[in-house]
Image (cartoon, rainbow, N blue to C red; front, side, top):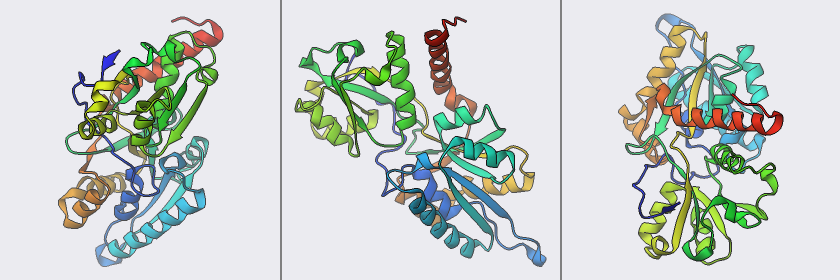
Length: 320
């Protein structure tokens, strides 16, 4: 249990989503995807097939998401003289099948989706986005200090609000793990009700004004709101705080020709070096795409393994 003012700022990965897109990565990729200039001597142009998990879009139909993808892909193809195609996949099973059949070259996934999919198909992570110097964000479970709730178990039968953003996959994994740790067998019915809200400020102020018992928002959202409204620091309490992790992963299928993979890396990795690239990054509140390192997912991998272990113990009485 933590006073919300006592924690050091853990950094921000994404602030608020832009427009209708649930991830800031996708539209950026549509605009600057790995397509190359026309090769000298009439050589064949490089074609890149890209897939996006439907989970990376917020409140957008699959057809609408595909329309957005096609629009930006056409702009990029015209500018660079290369070709690319995009697909919006509704399920991980669909992505898995298409990677196996080599119909997908590059895929954009939420981080929890990546951890699940990499166990089934060979993927090579390339980039994660940054904002400022931060690679990560955290989730926090917030209540009023005078609510009488001092632990997660005190929230049984209470109302929970959740911030709708890129953290959905992480939020579910984290909250589910917290509840299983407490011996909750059916986490679906632990809270009297749960609601999602687009604006984190709405979540926070609804709890502040006692219209809901608790909320889960990003650490950054809470920090920003507290800076603007100091009374939040005085009256709100952080009961739980998640480990740090990135929201999204940009990966290619293993076995992609070396030249193809290197082209993708070059185009995306140098995005911030061009005026146009800087404008795009600024537009989507990003600063750069950082080359992936295994340690970026260490904390999430630990939580992923713990969640799986606890579920096995709960269901089958399994013990390591």
